[in-house]
Image (tube, rainbow, N blue to C red):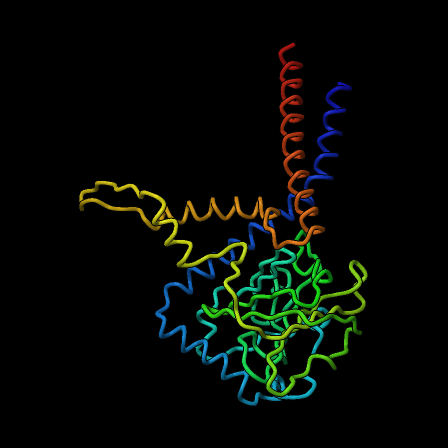
Length: 333
């Protein structure tokens, strides 16, 4: 009986230690799944339509907006997304192609984060990833624009913008909206009061981006801003690159089986490619600490997470098997 009680207490201890780390890993997988869903939706639209939608978003940044979403000002009309839940702006003709409100993705190589960008920093959207801040430019680039993207500094087992304080001038940030990718280079950061939007204004002929999150970590009464400016886009690839390129590579490398049906031979290309793509994505996320671009502190955190998850799973199942065997042994007596 004492042995069983010890095993139960051990299992509880393993769960207390392992579950928070397992949630972090599951959140990374969920993010990959959301990005893949977005990519699959974007892929089915004709190039001409995607160009039209992209131009529509760019035009929104140029044209004067209504007072509620004024864009061309020195200081934007701004509501702190972590205090005020502002409904997302409905952009005519474009929302129908944003699955679940996802406009695109943000990739920050140095901290190993690739997140979906949602339209509007609502409470729900911020729980799922990064989001655009109402009253600022859309993150599609262009002269005289200043996009602001916000995310929690850690949320319910997800890192999100947890490590953006590690970014230094020269670090890159890649924004992808539909199939257009723009690159920004970090110029600096600052800590401000929650209601201070003085540094979020548009500068004439400049293409700017600011990342917004809470500060200090776990206290959250101030805001950390990471500023960046537009630079030419390089060939730097994201951790997870959903879309046509990945699917073409898989199609070239894998022999897709053909099945004979009453209607004739059928090749399950889409199904097989999707399965292989999902497996590769899981492997890439699991071992993303091998990415040379990621900073050492972030790598250590990722390695520690993976080790704790693995050890916890092994310990949990071994203890559970021993407990079940002991219980079965008692009943046999």
